[in-house]
Image (cartoon, rainbow, N blue to C red; front, side, top):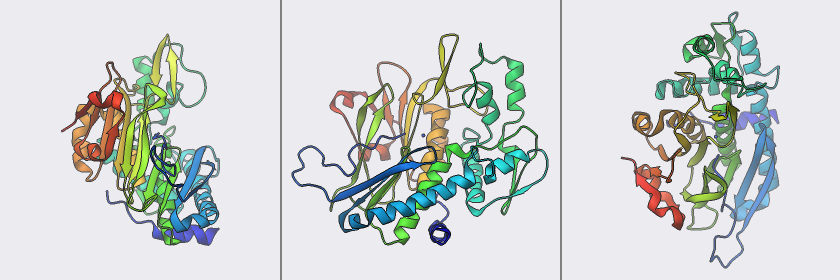
Length: 359
């Protein structure tokens, strides 16, 4: 298993740069007359559902490929998870304010990418936001009886910020006691990319990796056809806004206010926090992002959710190939799409009039 993981990691290159619903990958779309040659296996990894769909002649190797992907994700989880006391990130957090900690290659790579996207997003994406998330009762424990007062928020924010992270080669340090790293906003995308490159290294050409809605596709499900993904309606989990075509190598991720939240004095507060202010985000219901790799789509979906419609323009301009769909948290529904996203997106008929282009 260790050799397999090493082969997967060697295949992972530095990127060129949290849930989309798998709807039609591996399934025949309406009007399709023939049975698709696609096989799928599912399992639990990194605290969520995972699946691998393999198409064409490679489908006969689905069990072998799924076993490799599962081993890979479990190994990455053992490095990144804050729920595993001996993981690299748990050890780093335990040493906050004291000594530096040597990280595994996977943990160092992922943390380096997290720092990169914090800079790209002007701090809208920040893996040190944990103290504020906990203060709002969004991580563990009970929610506060009332919204956080200024003093409590100021205290929590003093331990938040990528400035607290020092990273040199594989050594990392948090400069303040009580600061902490949580790679949940980027780790799943990282795992998908490692699996993707590893499966390509095994000779697989037509497949889709899905880790809790962080999805990346290779090849085609059938000759001449793209992989098709349903984009969830953030106001109704049982409906989709439309279908997104994904070509070879592209990845997709979604951040929404419907997955996790707390209710304080009758008001709902989403789990996505603005690390710059310490307040849960208001005004955005969902953001779906397509990028050239899964790390980027994972980090950018959170970044753009925090930045909102107007604030996202600068971040999008810094990330070539990043395209997005925004659903503001208001009625009547509005669906804003960047020009590149609209090229591959087909809205459901009832939502076609809601679509507008973000230029």
